[in-house]
Image 1 (cartoon, rainbow, N blue to C red):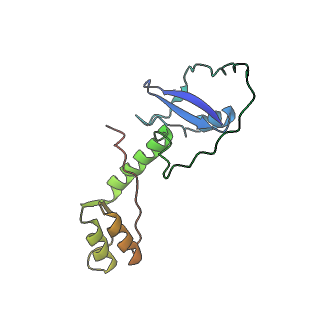
Image 2: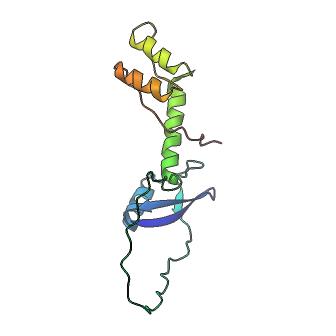
Image 3: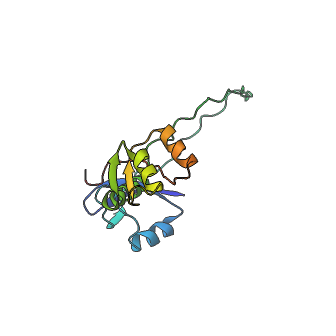
Length: 154
């Protein structure tokens, strides 16, 4: 894998990981590399500081076997969401908002009414608790949960 610092035509900088430099070139030429801030597909590699390995200090003593450490109960998230994933989630959000009706905290009840045929079947989105989501699944109602990132336009 190779890491590139990228910049769009509007001077927004972000990073991306690619299999190799050819993969970045092909994706970029096909317009598939987009700025997560403005959505521009006019993206190029920005200048990056080279990664230089530090010299290891000379060993002065014999190695000692490491004591096993207990594993933590929970692992924290591995850091911020990569820029390309944020851009994809922003596009998904825009499509959901454009094509579905917002029903707010009444999502579970509206989904049930549609499932029972009491109201017109259509795409909806809103809020549901973990319990509500599980109950809907148990009732055979297909739902999906999406990470709701800030809109691309602000």
